Amino acid sequence: MPTFITDPWPWYIAGPAIALVMFLLIFFGKTFGVSDNLRTMCTIMGAERYSKFFKLNWKNKIWNLVFTVGAVIGGFISVRFLSNNQEVALNSKTVSRLESMGFEAVGQSYAPSELFSTEVATSFLGILFLLFGGVLVGFGTRYAGGCTSGHAISGISNLQTSSLMAVVGFFLGGLIMVHLIFPSLLPFWNNI
Image (cartoon, rainbow, N blue to C red; front, top):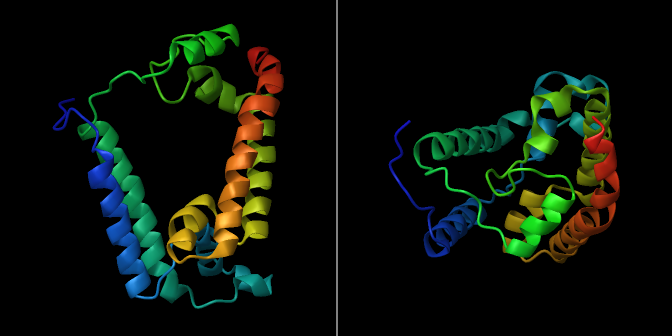
């Protein structure tokens, strides 16, 4: 498949583009967050009959659904037509550490097949991890009052202290997962 662009957009184009979108959202009184779309979709499907949480005017939230669909379509276009499929540039120490953990072909893709293949996702342990992870993400998103994109992009743009605290928590949780919990879970993955 032909590609039209050989290099990713530099930060000085992508960063101001995100800032422009956030400025427009703030100007029009909107707040961005992907997790809010789940609530909107549940409301559209009639969940308000079972919980007061889903009683909202979902027609005012359609723009966020369209935005998210556009982001998915944009990601697809980016991967299929605007990517040169270059290898991921990793530090040699990172490559050595990942190879010692059992990863093969380190740096050839952003999602290693040892974790993200169809075989892993459809195995019993893979389904169990996905289900448990989904529950944790759902609980965390609801408990934090939003998702990473909502807090990190929209909340911090609105100078919300709670969003800054949430983002710090997200990053700390990610660091703890990658450096402490994940290495102890790898032996289970290698047995799938």
